[in-house]
Length: 308
Image (cartoon, rainbow, N blue to C red; front, side, top):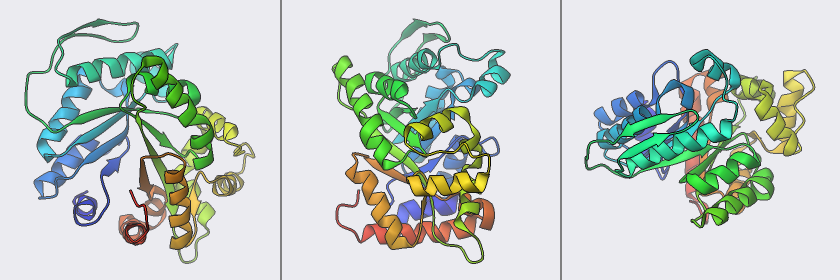
């Protein structure tokens, strides 16, 4: 973790991101990196709601901002129905309602409010003790228009994963703007977590896609989003589905100049922050290989016009 934090510290990379981890909890990993001398802005994309009460989620996010001395973007999502059942005894009848309640409580606590909130899924009476801290923003994991409209109404950011730039431009951003307009508030920032890979010796890129995104391709809510985006992942053959992800722009593969061009397409589509995700490379060749590829991509992006 400290090595990746150092890369953010020493390069133009804006923030260190991590998804939900059941091995080393993300907040603790980031705090460890700060303890080694590399406190950097961080992003959680996304923490799964069934694992934490929203009061603890707000407390953990603010604690991270205090520990690192930098802003935090804390993203949350309801997770899959099987996880919801495993943690709660039953799935959320309405994931949208659950997500709205969760974000409402977390944002209210982080804004220093005294809450007396009782919803269908979450209850919270109380407030966080006052404490100076860098800014903590709250994001929602977004795949489809319903959650995008909700993020527009209640969140600081919409955080996507495996979503092609064209789908963001044509589907997610219009829904996000619709939600924000209905609530009379500014349009939230859009963060696109984008899996990608440079070529690896003696390994087809499809194998890297399967290693990094195979479980997502098999999940019904991701499969539905990808079909909406024109990416067919229903072949039953993971390698064929991996090729569909590559062709549809959900997973970026190619030489570094090709990746730079494809990443620029996300910015040109209205995305505010692109997260370079090398999970597949790390899975098949280890974290050092992923680090080398990240450095190559960040260096190439730093030399382009309009880099954000």
